[in-house]
Figure 1 (tube, rainbow, N blue to C red):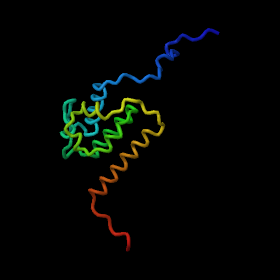
Figure 2 (tube, one colour):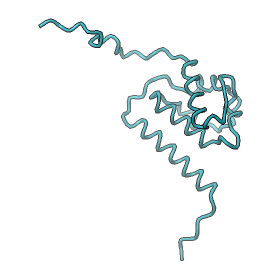
Figure 3 (cartoon, one colour):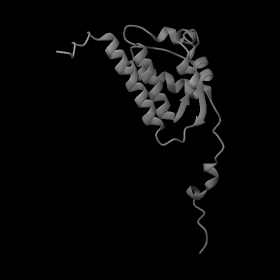
Figure 4 (tube, rainbow, N blue to C red):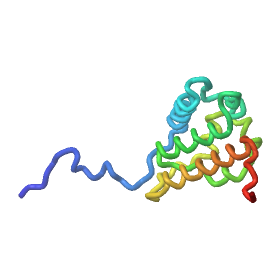
Length: 141
């Protein structure tokens, strides 16, 4: 039997080499996510500084949600450095510079990658809610 010559049988399309890293594509994607997460209340472009994003309608939890959504969408992680530095160290970077500096362009192969990222977000959200909310009643009654 002759081997199929259909286009979808061409395995060369599935090369294991990493895709070309386009800062512009990922910057545009991150901006679209920021707009969606903020319900279009935050308007930004590639030259907007990260610190300019934060306002009454958009806080650090919203920013972490946008990061988490971006990572899940593209199966790419932000570097560990991002999670270790205080926000003040990158708030003057433009969105494009932020993506270029902190995005690891390698595709994540861990099947639990997205789950782990959403659990990180859940932890940040829980912390924000307990820090901002009223004090919990004493449980020693």
